[in-house]
Amino acid sequence: MPTHVALLRGINLGPHKRVAMPALRTLVGSLGHTDVATYIASGNVVFTAADAAPGPNLEKAIATEGLRSRMVLQVHDELVLEVAEGERERLEALVRREMAGAADLSVALEVSVGFGPSWDAAAH
Image (cartoon, rainbow, N blue to C red; front, top):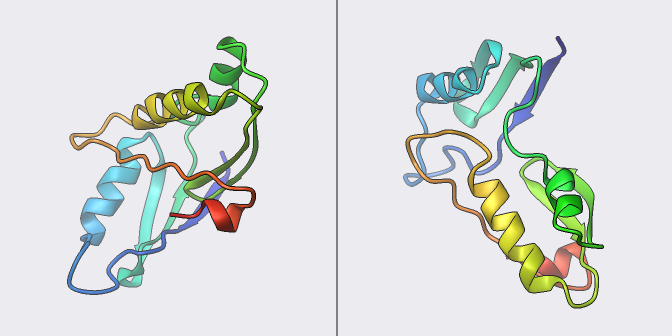
């Protein structure tokens, strides 16, 4: 099983959105990962990956729905999709549904979506 490093941005950068490192370790461990360790209070996490990645297979869901759109890139917690003409609303609903159920947590996952001709323009 491979070892991964997760560099989570926006963790503990001020008085808001504070995340205790023991809680972060518990969360990562609850997703089936082992040997979870955090370094400094910045959200850096090292873990051994579970045999199977948790969460939905978005590419499979897109194909199952018969959409021509496709996932181009995943960078950390962001997905870049190429949206076929006329599929924006269906794809957005699919992405929101699949990603909101990506992990079984006691709190709801918030999914935000942006559109634009470039990754920068779609940022929100």
